[in-house]
Image (cartoon, rainbow, N blue to C red):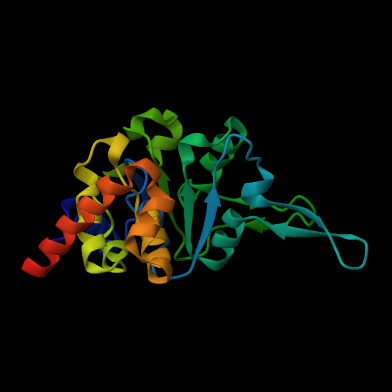
Length: 232
């Protein structure tokens, strides 16, 4: 299968060692799947209710009845020198966005002081950040945060690795997802759920359960995908 240009660009950036990238575009294209990659990574999922403790860490009850400090995903990524994936960054609260300015600053400038021990933590060699968002344009992010991520890739096609994990006819449906109107787009997560369920109860029953009144439309698309798979 021909690799879409957006994913060729992502692969090029990774080979070039670019350490700050935004992947943005419609949901269900495999942005997180690709951002996590095959190597070690830490993941931060942003919501309106996220707090700074979700980023850097918090005190938690210990087995001995006391309290212990647990690093958050950003500090774990710093210490390990691995990728930090910040999911749905546009949904982050104001406090979290402000903290992300420090967590995603250049490795030379970034530092964090442990609130209990006073330890100064800096990003270890190998640290990188990929942010994902369903927004239409990365300039919707605060200017200071956007400045830390000069490279943003518009993801308008499903991730090839995710598509290849599906059976042939579902893969054909997935490859057409980026060209579908948003109201009719089927996410990779939904196709993977269908793939798994259909192994137990077949395509027709799985389509009824997952797609309800759109089941027949989906089965028609699946039949076309099956024809294209046999022809390829």
